[in-house]
Length: 85
Image (cartoon, rainbow, N blue to C red; front, top):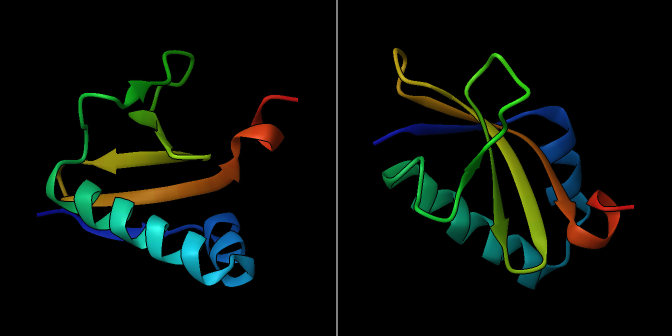
C-alpha cells in the first residue's frame, strides 16, 4: 500500500472543494493508495519523473510515484474545463 501525500496546489483545491467533490477525491486517492497505476491512468511522457495523470469524473489528478519509498504525491487536482483551456 502506498502512502498518499498532497502537494500545496492539491491541498488548496481540496480546502476549497464542496463536500461531494471532497469525498469523491478522497475515494479516488484511497483507490490510488492500493493501485498507484490503474488501467485508466496515463503516463506523462514529456517528464523524466514518473508522472501520471488520472481522470476522476470531472477532475484531472496529476501525481508522481516514488516506488522506493512507497509514496504517491498528488501534485495538482483541477477540473477538466480548467485543465484544457
